[in-house]
Length: 418
Image 1 (cartoon, rainbow, N blue to C red):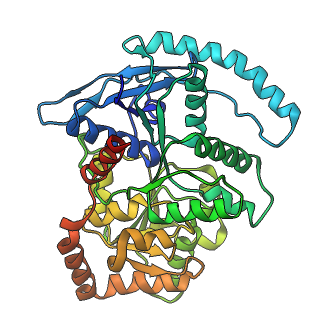
Image 2: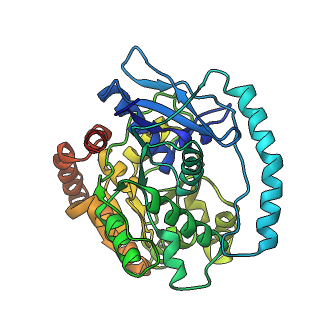
Protein backbone atom coordinates (compact mmCIF):
# COMPACT_ATOMS: atom_id res chain seq x y z
CA UNK A 1 0.00 0.00 0.00
CA UNK A 2 2.99 2.29 -0.23
CA UNK A 3 1.85 5.69 -1.48
CA UNK A 4 -1.85 4.87 -1.09
CA UNK A 5 -4.27 7.64 -0.09
CA UNK A 6 -7.09 6.65 2.26
CA UNK A 7 -10.07 8.90 2.92
CA UNK A 8 -12.05 8.35 6.11
CA UNK A 9 -15.87 8.28 5.82
CA UNK A 10 -16.70 7.48 9.46
CA UNK A 11 -18.73 10.67 9.96
CA UNK A 12 -20.96 9.64 7.06
CA UNK A 13 -21.44 6.23 8.64
CA UNK A 14 -22.45 7.73 11.99
CA UNK A 15 -24.94 10.08 10.30
CA UNK A 16 -26.84 7.30 8.53
CA UNK A 17 -30.14 5.84 9.72
CA UNK A 18 -32.42 3.10 8.38
CA UNK A 19 -35.00 5.69 7.30
CA UNK A 20 -32.79 8.20 5.55
CA UNK A 21 -29.21 9.34 5.28
CA UNK A 22 -28.97 13.00 6.31
CA UNK A 23 -25.74 14.90 5.87
CA UNK A 24 -25.23 18.33 7.43
CA UNK A 25 -22.17 20.20 8.67
CA UNK A 26 -19.10 18.02 9.07
CA UNK A 27 -20.85 14.96 7.62
CA UNK A 28 -21.65 17.00 4.49
CA UNK A 29 -17.97 17.91 4.12
CA UNK A 30 -16.92 14.26 4.49
CA UNK A 31 -19.44 12.95 1.96
CA UNK A 32 -18.93 15.60 -0.72
CA UNK A 33 -15.14 15.37 -0.59
CA UNK A 34 -15.46 11.59 -0.81
CA UNK A 35 -17.71 11.75 -3.86
CA UNK A 36 -15.40 14.10 -5.72
CA UNK A 37 -12.30 12.13 -4.75
CA UNK A 38 -13.85 8.96 -6.18
CA UNK A 39 -14.40 10.72 -9.51
CA UNK A 40 -11.05 12.52 -9.57
CA UNK A 41 -8.64 9.76 -8.51
CA UNK A 42 -9.47 6.05 -9.02
CA UNK A 43 -6.55 5.08 -6.77
CA UNK A 44 -8.00 6.70 -3.65
CA UNK A 45 -9.42 4.18 -1.17
CA UNK A 46 -12.22 4.81 1.32
CA UNK A 47 -12.44 3.51 4.88
CA UNK A 48 -14.55 3.70 8.02
CA UNK A 49 -13.53 2.99 11.61
CA UNK A 50 -15.44 0.54 13.82
CA UNK A 51 -15.50 1.62 17.47
CA UNK A 52 -16.48 -1.91 18.42
CA UNK A 53 -13.63 -3.85 16.84
CA UNK A 54 -11.22 -0.84 16.82
CA UNK A 55 -10.34 -1.61 13.21
CA UNK A 56 -10.68 0.00 9.80
CA UNK A 57 -12.94 -1.37 7.07
CA UNK A 58 -12.82 -0.60 3.37
CA UNK A 59 -15.85 1.01 1.71
CA UNK A 60 -16.70 0.28 -1.91
CA UNK A 61 -18.54 2.71 -4.12
CA UNK A 62 -20.35 2.75 -7.45
CA UNK A 63 -21.55 5.26 -10.00
CA UNK A 64 -25.18 5.74 -10.91
CA UNK A 65 -26.43 6.19 -14.47
CA UNK A 66 -26.27 9.98 -14.07
CA UNK A 67 -22.65 9.89 -12.87
CA UNK A 68 -23.38 10.27 -9.15
CA UNK A 69 -21.26 8.43 -6.57
CA UNK A 70 -22.81 6.19 -3.92
CA UNK A 71 -20.85 4.65 -1.07
CA UNK A 72 -21.88 1.21 0.12
CA UNK A 73 -22.29 2.17 3.77
CA UNK A 74 -24.41 0.14 6.18
CA UNK A 75 -27.44 2.12 7.36
CA UNK A 76 -27.82 0.94 10.95
CA UNK A 77 -24.42 0.02 12.34
CA UNK A 78 -24.75 2.39 15.31
CA UNK A 79 -21.54 2.99 17.23
CA UNK A 80 -21.74 4.64 20.66
CA UNK A 81 -19.34 5.18 23.54
CA UNK A 82 -18.92 7.26 26.70
CA UNK A 83 -16.28 9.97 26.69
CA UNK A 84 -13.52 10.07 29.30
CA UNK A 85 -13.82 13.12 31.57
CA UNK A 86 -10.39 14.62 30.86
CA UNK A 87 -9.09 16.81 33.65
CA UNK A 88 -12.21 16.22 35.71
CA UNK A 89 -13.62 13.72 38.15
CA UNK A 90 -11.82 10.38 38.50
CA UNK A 91 -15.18 8.90 39.44
CA UNK A 92 -16.81 9.99 36.18
CA UNK A 93 -13.83 8.74 34.17
CA UNK A 94 -14.05 5.41 35.97
CA UNK A 95 -17.76 5.13 35.23
CA UNK A 96 -17.11 5.92 31.56
CA UNK A 97 -14.42 3.22 31.37
CA UNK A 98 -16.75 0.70 33.00
CA UNK A 99 -19.67 1.57 30.70
CA UNK A 100 -17.48 1.46 27.60
CA UNK A 101 -16.59 -2.16 28.41
CA UNK A 102 -20.24 -3.09 27.85
CA UNK A 103 -20.76 -0.56 25.06
CA UNK A 104 -17.90 -2.13 23.08
CA UNK A 105 -19.75 -5.44 23.11
CA UNK A 106 -22.90 -3.74 21.84
CA UNK A 107 -20.93 -1.94 19.13
CA UNK A 108 -19.33 -5.19 17.98
CA UNK A 109 -22.69 -6.94 17.86
CA UNK A 110 -24.24 -4.09 15.86
CA UNK A 111 -21.28 -4.10 13.49
CA UNK A 112 -21.43 -7.85 12.94
CA UNK A 113 -25.15 -7.67 12.19
CA UNK A 114 -25.19 -4.65 9.88
CA UNK A 115 -21.72 -4.19 8.35
CA UNK A 116 -21.26 -7.64 6.83
CA UNK A 117 -20.53 -6.13 3.41
CA UNK A 118 -17.38 -4.34 4.61
CA UNK A 119 -13.96 -5.98 4.69
CA UNK A 120 -11.34 -5.27 7.35
CA UNK A 121 -8.29 -3.46 6.02
CA UNK A 122 -4.82 -2.95 7.46
CA UNK A 123 -3.50 0.58 6.91
CA UNK A 124 0.23 0.09 7.30
CA UNK A 125 1.54 3.11 5.38
CA UNK A 126 0.51 5.77 2.88
CA UNK A 127 -1.66 8.76 3.86
CA UNK A 128 -4.91 8.74 5.84
CA UNK A 129 -7.06 11.87 5.50
CA UNK A 130 -9.94 12.46 7.89
CA UNK A 131 -12.35 15.38 8.15
CA UNK A 132 -14.05 13.79 11.17
CA UNK A 133 -14.42 15.43 14.55
CA UNK A 134 -11.18 15.25 16.55
CA UNK A 135 -12.75 12.95 19.15
CA UNK A 136 -13.23 10.32 16.43
CA UNK A 137 -9.74 10.77 15.02
CA UNK A 138 -8.22 10.20 18.48
CA UNK A 139 -9.59 6.64 18.53
CA UNK A 140 -8.35 6.03 14.99
CA UNK A 141 -4.87 7.25 15.90
CA UNK A 142 -4.75 4.99 18.96
CA UNK A 143 -5.69 1.97 16.84
CA UNK A 144 -3.01 2.82 14.27
CA UNK A 145 -0.41 3.23 17.03
CA UNK A 146 -1.47 -0.15 18.42
CA UNK A 147 -0.80 -1.70 15.01
CA UNK A 148 2.52 0.18 14.64
CA UNK A 149 1.29 1.72 11.41
CA UNK A 150 3.56 4.10 9.52
CA UNK A 151 0.66 5.90 7.82
CA UNK A 152 0.85 9.70 7.68
CA UNK A 153 -2.29 11.11 9.30
CA UNK A 154 -3.77 14.32 7.88
CA UNK A 155 -6.84 15.79 9.65
CA UNK A 156 -9.01 18.62 8.43
CA UNK A 157 -9.67 20.92 11.38
CA UNK A 158 -13.02 22.74 11.23
CA UNK A 159 -12.93 25.22 14.11
CA UNK A 160 -11.82 25.91 17.70
CA UNK A 161 -15.07 27.42 18.95
CA UNK A 162 -15.24 25.63 22.34
CA UNK A 163 -11.81 26.98 23.25
CA UNK A 164 -13.11 30.55 23.19
CA UNK A 165 -15.34 29.73 26.15
CA UNK A 166 -12.23 28.84 28.14
CA UNK A 167 -11.17 32.45 27.99
CA UNK A 168 -14.50 33.90 29.09
CA UNK A 169 -16.19 31.55 31.59
CA UNK A 170 -15.90 28.30 33.50
CA UNK A 171 -14.27 25.65 31.34
CA UNK A 172 -16.90 22.94 30.87
CA UNK A 173 -16.26 19.22 30.68
CA UNK A 174 -17.04 19.22 26.94
CA UNK A 175 -14.46 21.96 26.37
CA UNK A 176 -11.82 20.00 28.31
CA UNK A 177 -12.48 16.96 26.16
CA UNK A 178 -12.35 19.10 23.01
CA UNK A 179 -9.04 20.60 24.11
CA UNK A 180 -7.56 17.17 24.92
CA UNK A 181 -8.70 15.71 21.58
CA UNK A 182 -7.27 18.58 19.54
CA UNK A 183 -3.94 18.42 21.38
CA UNK A 184 -3.74 14.69 20.78
CA UNK A 185 -4.53 15.05 17.06
CA UNK A 186 -2.25 18.04 16.43
CA UNK A 187 0.74 16.39 18.12
CA UNK A 188 0.44 13.25 15.98
CA UNK A 189 -0.42 14.72 12.57
CA UNK A 190 2.11 14.91 9.77
CA UNK A 191 0.15 17.72 8.13
CA UNK A 192 -2.93 19.70 9.14
CA UNK A 193 -5.54 21.01 6.72
CA UNK A 194 -7.50 24.09 7.86
CA UNK A 195 -10.90 24.75 6.29
CA UNK A 196 -10.32 28.51 6.15
CA UNK A 197 -7.61 31.10 6.63
CA UNK A 198 -9.45 32.09 9.80
CA UNK A 199 -9.17 28.56 11.25
CA UNK A 200 -5.46 28.44 10.40
CA UNK A 201 -4.96 31.79 12.13
CA UNK A 202 -6.94 30.55 15.15
CA UNK A 203 -4.67 27.51 15.38
CA UNK A 204 -1.64 29.79 15.36
CA UNK A 205 -3.11 32.06 18.03
CA UNK A 206 -4.05 29.24 20.41
CA UNK A 207 -0.66 27.58 19.87
CA UNK A 208 1.05 30.91 20.56
CA UNK A 209 -0.74 31.14 23.90
CA UNK A 210 0.27 27.61 24.82
CA UNK A 211 -3.34 26.38 24.79
CA UNK A 212 -2.66 24.10 21.82
CA UNK A 213 0.66 22.51 20.83
CA UNK A 214 2.65 24.10 18.05
CA UNK A 215 1.55 22.33 14.85
CA UNK A 216 3.72 21.02 12.07
CA UNK A 217 2.93 22.07 8.49
CA UNK A 218 -0.51 23.64 8.02
CA UNK A 219 -2.23 24.01 4.63
CA UNK A 220 -5.44 25.94 4.01
CA UNK A 221 -8.08 24.37 1.77
CA UNK A 222 -11.07 26.67 1.93
CA UNK A 223 -14.48 25.06 1.83
CA UNK A 224 -17.22 25.76 -0.67
CA UNK A 225 -20.11 27.83 -1.86
CA UNK A 226 -21.61 25.03 -3.92
CA UNK A 227 -24.95 23.62 -2.82
CA UNK A 228 -25.52 20.32 -4.70
CA UNK A 229 -28.97 19.60 -6.08
CA UNK A 230 -30.93 16.94 -4.25
CA UNK A 231 -32.01 13.59 -5.66
CA UNK A 232 -34.96 13.01 -3.30
CA UNK A 233 -38.52 14.01 -4.08
CA UNK A 234 -39.76 17.23 -2.41
CA UNK A 235 -41.46 16.60 0.94
CA UNK A 236 -42.49 20.05 2.17
CA UNK A 237 -44.59 22.98 1.01
CA UNK A 238 -42.64 26.20 0.78
CA UNK A 239 -43.71 28.99 3.16
CA UNK A 240 -45.39 32.18 1.94
CA UNK A 241 -43.09 34.82 0.48
CA UNK A 242 -41.28 36.88 1.53
CA UNK A 243 -39.44 34.76 4.07
CA UNK A 244 -36.06 34.74 5.74
CA UNK A 245 -34.21 31.45 6.17
CA UNK A 246 -31.87 30.27 8.90
CA UNK A 247 -30.16 26.88 8.78
CA UNK A 248 -28.95 24.86 11.76
CA UNK A 249 -29.12 27.76 14.20
CA UNK A 250 -29.52 27.53 17.95
CA UNK A 251 -29.28 29.76 20.99
CA UNK A 252 -25.90 30.96 22.23
CA UNK A 253 -22.98 30.95 19.81
CA UNK A 254 -25.28 30.45 16.82
CA UNK A 255 -27.14 33.51 18.11
CA UNK A 256 -30.60 32.94 16.63
CA UNK A 257 -31.92 35.18 19.42
CA UNK A 258 -30.93 38.28 17.46
CA UNK A 259 -33.07 37.19 14.50
CA UNK A 260 -36.20 36.92 16.66
CA UNK A 261 -35.40 40.26 18.25
CA UNK A 262 -35.00 41.88 14.81
CA UNK A 263 -38.43 40.63 13.73
CA UNK A 264 -39.86 42.02 16.95
CA UNK A 265 -38.28 45.42 16.24
CA UNK A 266 -39.85 45.45 12.76
CA UNK A 267 -43.25 44.67 14.26
CA UNK A 268 -42.85 47.37 16.90
CA UNK A 269 -41.98 49.93 14.20
CA UNK A 270 -45.10 49.04 12.22
CA UNK A 271 -43.02 47.63 9.33
CA UNK A 272 -43.58 44.46 7.32
CA UNK A 273 -42.45 41.36 9.22
CA UNK A 274 -41.37 38.59 6.84
CA UNK A 275 -41.88 34.95 7.70
CA UNK A 276 -38.87 33.22 9.28
CA UNK A 277 -38.08 29.60 8.46
CA UNK A 278 -35.75 27.77 10.87
CA UNK A 279 -34.45 24.67 9.06
CA UNK A 280 -32.49 21.82 10.65
CA UNK A 281 -32.67 20.08 14.00
CA UNK A 282 -35.50 21.48 16.14
CA UNK A 283 -34.28 21.69 19.72
CA UNK A 284 -36.48 21.87 22.84
CA UNK A 285 -34.51 24.79 24.24
CA UNK A 286 -35.20 26.79 21.09
CA UNK A 287 -38.91 25.96 21.22
CA UNK A 288 -39.09 27.14 24.82
CA UNK A 289 -37.35 30.38 23.87
CA UNK A 290 -39.88 31.14 21.12
CA UNK A 291 -42.74 30.50 23.55
CA UNK A 292 -41.81 33.58 25.61
CA UNK A 293 -44.68 36.01 25.95
CA UNK A 294 -42.78 38.85 24.27
CA UNK A 295 -42.85 36.94 20.98
CA UNK A 296 -46.64 36.45 21.01
CA UNK A 297 -47.13 39.10 18.31
CA UNK A 298 -44.71 37.50 15.82
CA UNK A 299 -44.90 33.81 16.68
CA UNK A 300 -47.23 33.16 13.75
CA UNK A 301 -44.43 34.37 11.44
CA UNK A 302 -41.99 31.69 12.66
CA UNK A 303 -41.97 28.20 11.14
CA UNK A 304 -39.61 25.27 11.66
CA UNK A 305 -38.64 22.66 9.07
CA UNK A 306 -37.06 19.65 10.74
CA UNK A 307 -34.14 18.13 8.82
CA UNK A 308 -35.20 18.90 5.23
CA UNK A 309 -33.82 16.63 2.54
CA UNK A 310 -31.36 18.13 0.06
CA UNK A 311 -34.02 18.83 -2.58
CA UNK A 312 -36.11 20.80 -0.09
CA UNK A 313 -33.06 22.57 1.31
CA UNK A 314 -32.20 23.87 -2.18
CA UNK A 315 -35.81 24.97 -2.66
CA UNK A 316 -35.77 26.81 0.66
CA UNK A 317 -32.52 28.58 -0.22
CA UNK A 318 -33.65 29.54 -3.72
CA UNK A 319 -37.02 31.04 -2.75
CA UNK A 320 -35.86 32.87 0.38
CA UNK A 321 -35.60 36.65 0.41
CA UNK A 322 -32.30 36.12 2.24
CA UNK A 323 -30.43 33.72 4.49
CA UNK A 324 -29.52 35.04 7.93
CA UNK A 325 -26.38 33.65 9.59
CA UNK A 326 -25.91 35.59 12.85
CA UNK A 327 -23.31 33.32 14.50
CA UNK A 328 -20.74 34.96 16.76
CA UNK A 329 -18.04 32.70 15.36
CA UNK A 330 -17.81 30.04 12.63
CA UNK A 331 -15.06 27.90 11.17
CA UNK A 332 -16.35 28.47 7.64
CA UNK A 333 -20.12 28.99 7.47
CA UNK A 334 -21.44 26.60 4.81
CA UNK A 335 -25.01 28.02 4.74
CA UNK A 336 -23.76 31.47 3.69
CA UNK A 337 -21.95 30.06 0.67
CA UNK A 338 -24.77 27.66 -0.17
CA UNK A 339 -27.34 30.48 -0.15
CA UNK A 340 -25.29 32.57 -2.57
CA UNK A 341 -24.79 29.51 -4.80
CA UNK A 342 -28.60 29.39 -5.05
CA UNK A 343 -28.67 33.11 -5.91
CA UNK A 344 -29.90 34.26 -2.51
CA UNK A 345 -28.37 37.12 -0.50
CA UNK A 346 -26.64 36.23 2.77
CA UNK A 347 -27.14 38.54 5.76
CA UNK A 348 -24.13 37.77 7.96
CA UNK A 349 -22.79 38.74 11.31
CA UNK A 350 -19.42 40.43 11.32
CA UNK A 351 -17.72 37.13 12.32
CA UNK A 352 -14.36 37.22 10.55
CA UNK A 353 -14.69 34.07 8.47
CA UNK A 354 -18.02 35.12 6.94
CA UNK A 355 -16.16 37.91 5.14
CA UNK A 356 -13.89 35.16 3.82
CA UNK A 357 -16.93 33.29 2.50
CA UNK A 358 -19.05 36.15 1.15
CA UNK A 359 -16.65 39.02 0.50
CA UNK A 360 -18.33 42.15 -0.88
CA UNK A 361 -21.51 40.22 -1.68
CA UNK A 362 -22.52 39.75 1.96
CA UNK A 363 -24.70 42.10 4.00
CA UNK A 364 -23.14 42.47 7.45
CA UNK A 365 -24.42 43.48 10.89
CA UNK A 366 -23.16 43.47 14.47
CA UNK A 367 -24.42 40.20 16.03
CA UNK A 368 -25.45 42.13 19.17
CA UNK A 369 -27.50 44.71 17.26
CA UNK A 370 -31.02 43.51 16.30
CA UNK A 371 -31.89 46.99 15.04
CA UNK A 372 -29.10 46.83 12.45
CA UNK A 373 -30.39 43.43 11.29
CA UNK A 374 -33.94 44.79 11.15
CA UNK A 375 -32.75 47.69 8.96
CA UNK A 376 -31.13 45.30 6.46
CA UNK A 377 -34.20 43.05 6.34
CA UNK A 378 -36.47 46.05 5.81
CA UNK A 379 -34.28 47.41 3.03
CA UNK A 380 -34.29 44.08 1.21
CA UNK A 381 -38.05 43.86 1.54
CA UNK A 382 -38.92 47.43 0.64
CA UNK A 383 -36.36 48.26 -2.07
CA UNK A 384 -36.85 45.92 -5.04
CA UNK A 385 -34.05 47.52 -7.05
CA UNK A 386 -31.53 47.02 -4.22
CA UNK A 387 -32.62 43.41 -3.90
CA UNK A 388 -32.43 42.71 -7.65
CA UNK A 389 -29.06 44.44 -8.02
CA UNK A 390 -27.61 42.28 -5.25
CA UNK A 391 -29.00 39.09 -6.79
CA UNK A 392 -27.51 40.14 -10.14
CA UNK A 393 -24.09 40.66 -8.54
CA UNK A 394 -24.28 37.23 -6.91
CA UNK A 395 -25.22 35.60 -10.22
CA UNK A 396 -22.30 37.30 -11.99
CA UNK A 397 -19.88 36.10 -9.29
CA UNK A 398 -21.07 32.47 -9.30
CA UNK A 399 -18.47 31.20 -11.83
CA UNK A 400 -15.80 32.18 -9.28
CA UNK A 401 -17.45 30.39 -6.35
CA UNK A 402 -15.70 27.38 -4.88
CA UNK A 403 -17.08 23.94 -5.70
CA UNK A 404 -16.57 20.54 -4.09
CA UNK A 405 -14.48 19.61 -7.12
CA UNK A 406 -12.23 22.64 -6.50
CA UNK A 407 -11.82 21.73 -2.83
CA UNK A 408 -11.10 18.06 -3.49
CA UNK A 409 -8.66 18.76 -6.32
CA UNK A 410 -6.62 20.99 -4.00
CA UNK A 411 -6.85 18.45 -1.20
CA UNK A 412 -5.83 15.42 -3.29
CA UNK A 413 -2.92 17.40 -4.73
CA UNK A 414 -1.72 18.24 -1.21
CA UNK A 415 -2.05 14.63 -0.04
CA UNK A 416 -0.19 13.30 -3.09
CA UNK A 417 2.67 15.72 -2.41
CA UNK A 418 2.91 14.41 1.14
